[in-house]
Image 1 (cartoon, rainbow, N blue to C red):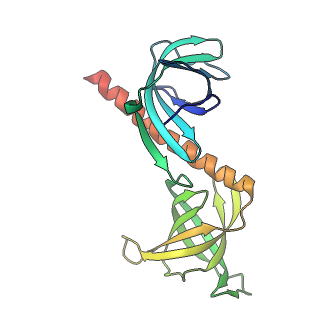
Image 2: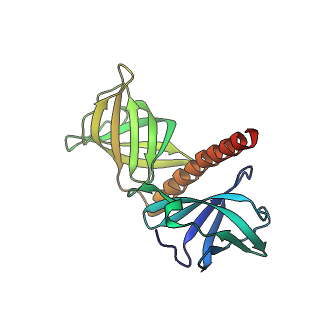
Length: 216
């Protein structure tokens, strides 16, 4: 990948319990200058895992803090072979287990007049594009339903079932659902939630790796 001034770089460091959202200020032959509101939680020589955002692509690379000065962090610029491709899809997706109650709105293009009917299920993964829901019902494809999604707060959602397959758990079914008529703010909220949950996973992996290396 190519770096560019203004590019978002999310920085994770072992034993640091928060990520830093930075942007590239300057690009030199052997190092990158990142600007951040507060750089004092990092120190010279600190190893880093950096996540670079490039449109819909996400790349990861390991680096090290060379210098910290005011709101600038100077890190080692990786060679191209040190950059790994992490994700390329329209929406990032995150595994989860979130219970929900669904209410059918439309089946076979017929609007449901009785909105009291409902079904329960569990969301297995989520992205800003939709959810994978597990239920005890073999729900019809293209059924439209509404439900409340609990992330940081309860969010009213409408989705259409695009495909249904038997779950690995006997008696359950997995329904791939696409969001419909979602506001831009809600989509941003879901995207940010998914991204932050992914960062938590990567931070745990990074801390575990650092502990393993220290114990060798």
